[in-house]
Length: 384
Image (tube, rainbow, N blue to C red; front, top):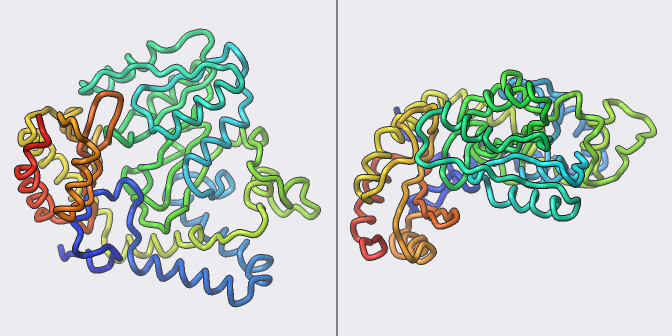
């Protein structure tokens, strides 16, 4: 299959193995983004008041079909951290309540819960998950050891940032519902990366980005809310959608889609994203990327004299993997990769653990991974 690297705007002098952090937008999608920005600037009043509601709905319909939900059940926001902030602010947890999570979650989400738990007196319980993962069943067993009669909600990453592991959120949500718990899922890394069907997962709240693996412009994310919670979700910004004079949609959408003057151009690119996916057979390309990760993960672990964090299966891995490394200088190591060898790759830190996380996107090649291997050999002074 022909390379499509030239359709991305990435600096060709850099070996880019860090798609997972902020994504990368292909030229046709970015040009569509700029088209909407120009449409806004050419006639701001008509665009904001008349055109944007219609084109926003078109974009939402395209995304709804891709992620398996109804367009009336989500709205766009800037990033998952903002989305989770809005959820936690709205749920009114009380002293004595507990929210169950794992010790492997994204730092900004942890900080959100830490802040509000201190403010309102509820507990944020981080249940330890043993690494390496052994099986989905073992993960589920360990997770529910943190449950008790005070547990009111669970919060879980669908694919973690530091460890790049895919968690069994469908099974966790199913059991949580049987226990009467609220389910909050951070799926930042999922859309465009791991197959997603929200109607099957049945989470109460689910947020995912367009600007990572779905290849959208930066600052584009959705927050899905189950209908039973939509009237409980408080808007982060009170504006014209609050007690709208002439409502045209649900209170949930009025309050969260009418937030004053803002540029929603990034939210309008979903049809262009879907067109790019179709024209370039991205589903097939992504499948090949996942196979490369499964093949290369043990090779990198062997090179660095460590072990994979999970069984080699698409049940736990997508287009990313995190290789445990032993180093005393994680930040210097990351800087050296970039400054001396032009490799953009993160060195992830979690508690006392360090990981070299590889993202393998459709614009990458095996040559990129070979170059990384050769560079690791040259940097053996950083590894214990």
